[in-house]
Image 1 (tube, rainbow, N blue to C red):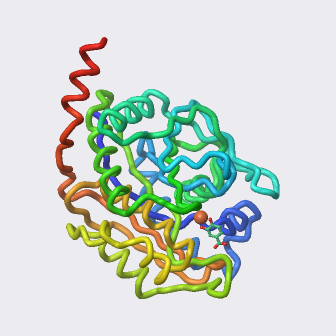
Image 2: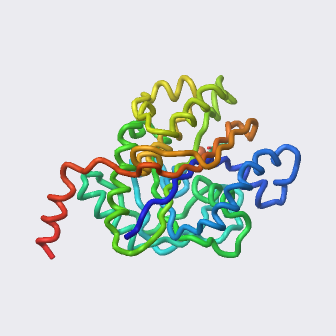
Length: 300
Ligand code: DHB
Ligand code: FE
């Protein structure tokens, strides 16, 4: 049986990708940001997950104003890094896990989450920067990745509660996959940041740390934060944090923190990073999944 072993949250600041690719991670400005990932790189080497369900947002690389999927899942075999204006990052292509991804897509849709299914796309800094932070320089990523893209760029993004519920549905999907796989769920983006307008550069350390605190343990407070609070307290791009709630929902009832890192400044963004382990990974049953599964089974 596949099982969710850990959840990881991590900002996906593009300049960290630039610093990493150009050997600047040891420079005074970047060093404290990167040092907070030393623990995690060691952990990943020991832990060796088989698959990551990597929740991220595309920044007008694979999608644009022509098509705006709220939730999309990558079911492809391979994803190339996108050229975001300065050439593609010199990192390895990202291998998918098509069998598990199709299984999750089916389970989510029968669980009444209407996912967009994507077989071909390129992946941008939202997905590749967290991989670099967690794995360092590699010839080949030592893990398969199922990209799960969320629209947080064009209004309206999904609510935090919907994201949490999607995470629970991902947990049900993973648990019903027969192969013995260690699966992590990552939530990327955030923390407080606003990249444009009069409030550009806004950082809210207190709010960010409240958010980190409440991802730990069994409180469900975060699922009820309205969009307007993210905008007001964390800037226009702070809304990326709803993606962390997909990760949190997938970890079930209660979590403990294995590692925590928060650092300002990096670019215009507060850098947050958390490694979580489920304490009680149970998620509520779906009102419809079992019946819809049985109906689907009858078709075969
Ligand atoms: C920055 C942060 C982001 O999350 C992003 O997608 C783009 C830019 C930044 O801090 O520069
Ligand atoms: Fe972003």
